[in-house]
Image (cartoon, rainbow, N blue to C red; front, side, top):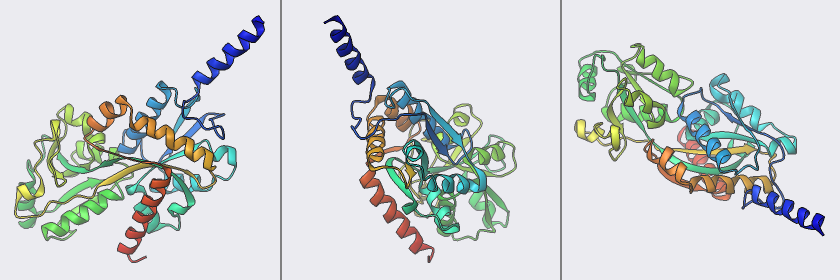
Length: 323
């Protein structure tokens, strides 16, 4: 009888240790590899490590270890291609890839890889950019930048790929100037662009709040333009919108942040991971330490919604570039 009670107690303990939303068809059976195609310290890297930390602390992955792997080769294309080609079912169910609109755009523009080669799992938030200068910068405000450009000075912005480039193009178009007048240097990750800015090698840095936060807090970066239709809050509140700088319309290119798995991922695993990300999106830690801290907008979509959303976004972008 005592052995029977002991067995029941062990089974109950195991059930409590597993995620409450785990489906009978899938529970992680090995460590999880999570690939992120930006350098450590970049916006996507911060996003990835924040989620993995919450998953671990809240035991949403049955005590398994999440191994974050930064793969920046080829502007991230090598990492994305690697995940899309994972074919072994067990490995596919335990592989995640940080994926956002800034990853999708260069991927579909420059390669044959498409969203259809992945299993969309979730969309978690919407992000926007700002322009920053260092305290010793030649131009202290964006109004000074505009004046310099129109006076024939060459001004350079450093940023990352994808959505940063798209935002830059919108900005140049609205200002009515050329890309030669206000140049843009594309880096593999926002952290690289910030390093360039901090070193005084460029005039401005384009970054989302997450990647620049520690430098703003330390007074090493100063926000001078909100690339948004609304002002940011907190220590970014001083950055004006473009319409507040001159007779221009506000410019923004909202960035969605999500996650996908390999195409070979099972439906049961996709459902499991989607539920895990939903639990993260509803946690106080996510809201306080990521959404509020880095001035994002919460925007959760489950795996079915994310699949449709990413496919529509891809179709619209392909149309916009004539492909």
